[in-house]
Picture (cartoon, rainbow, N blue to C red):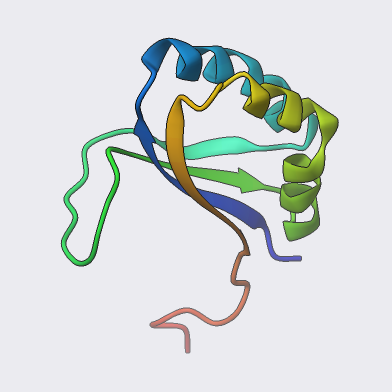
Length: 103
């Protein structure tokens, strides 16, 4: 079964409000098996537009990734942002097929 991912790009406009969200979102991620693969860090926008922060969260499945987004636990955490950030976010199914170099 393919894993599921959240891929987000974030510009924080109200750091205090965003900190409230960050402090609360981990409970929802843990409940649905989410784990950070990327959380901030250095990057270079080599093509197209970007935002200041990038986040990739892996879930055991696409269904779990969507369930987390739709959960009351995550929506409660999200409400704590109080408009503190502009976010582009997709929930996407991972790829389980052949890879380059596979015979």
